[in-house]
Length: 261
Image (cartoon, rainbow, N blue to C red; front, side, top):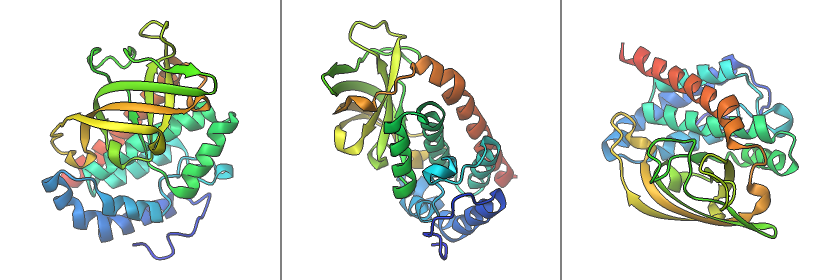
């Protein structure tokens, strides 16, 4: 573990964060990288260290407890993690994509602002479920629909893949906005661990990223209707999820390539 890493230091510089990544990379991530891949297991040791170093909240604004770094600096962190372990870098990047969606589209909504503070304070790990059985790889179509009754929602989604689902603290789930909505009229629902049931339906041997634990599940959830993001998924995808995904993925792939060379 990194000395004094558990102490929150909002507003840390990129240089300071890269130094922490290197310390964690050399002392923890590299030590377990081979076993993570060989056993296709979640990189628990690495993420315990990253949480101790408060790196899961790096993109969250400073007034909500994070470092408030730019997307460019976030890409640099993903690139550096890629030099140590592909799976760790990918899980970290996927988490930050979900964080970015909440930051960019929930920043002025009391419920999601409070949740971002909780993510910072507890170093929660976020996953996503955007694909669904029955629509192939089309993330702009959903079969399942969120149902709202009073102040509660219910949801059931058959997802062919939800990376690190059982290791996450919450999953951002795409679905039709209502039972009457067309397949492309979608919302994102924040599904917390305590709200969900997961039934494994398939596995996936993701060559080079086996530590992401990318398996398929039937996800069932009940929760507070405030967990439904009010902005349409089409806007969130176009303005944040799609561009941020390719920026952080491209960066971690650069780190993997640099390490290989």
